[in-house]
Length: 311
Image 1 (spheres, rainbow, N blue to C red):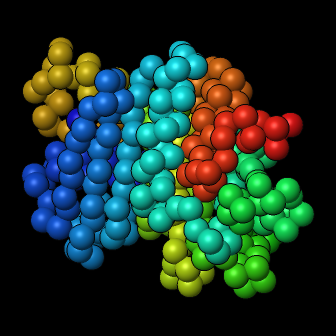
Image 2: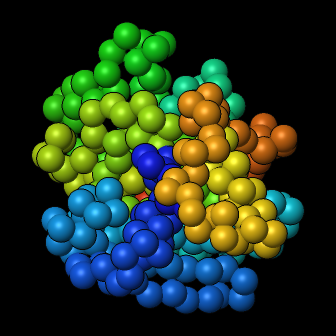
């Protein structure tokens, strides 16, 4: 597979794989894989600044869940995947917490492929404001969660980090959880993959529109990022087609090419592609992630109680 300059992917597992294909094993990176009845779990740890520079991801832990069957929206499978995500999120973010947790739904709610974060926030069990007013039998089991969808620079005229930092300074949460739509390198990972990282996030990096990072360095508290790839670069798709063609019909010509850029014009690098049923997929994925976050942050609340609260 060709290496595309400035490959647009937010997934640590893809970036590590691409570098390994070019250079072999990378010192300072540890990875492990696990299979849970059709759910593939990959854990990647970036341990050194040198390894971070090679893969283009900050040092930290990256959990990736892949489940191709998610596309078919089987209810039992969705619940199973939500449980796996909830468990991993609880461990990575040390949930539940007695102090406030702020969930930030990143993205543009006016653009369906980028609306995942705001859609998740709309389905969360937000409790910070009501803990003192609910019945005692329920209040004693609630943990404080706040949530916000800050929009994007093009809508608000304000950098997302400035909005989030202002809220953090005001309510002083113990932890921030971000939810965002990501970009992938492989079409098979669109809306079938979930990444959780304890490194925070740099919004827009996967589509070439880097904004200031939302992480412990900029906020002063831990930031856990949850993301799902919803788009892929047109150049990545074209590169895969060219790679398959030359490998099968003309491997010699393939070997003489320095780069896939020899064939691809600049327009393809600006094109981002999503699935034809993205509206349905975003609806289902937002429910899945909201369920996982709700159960991780409120483990003592039953499913029925959550449904009553959210109605």
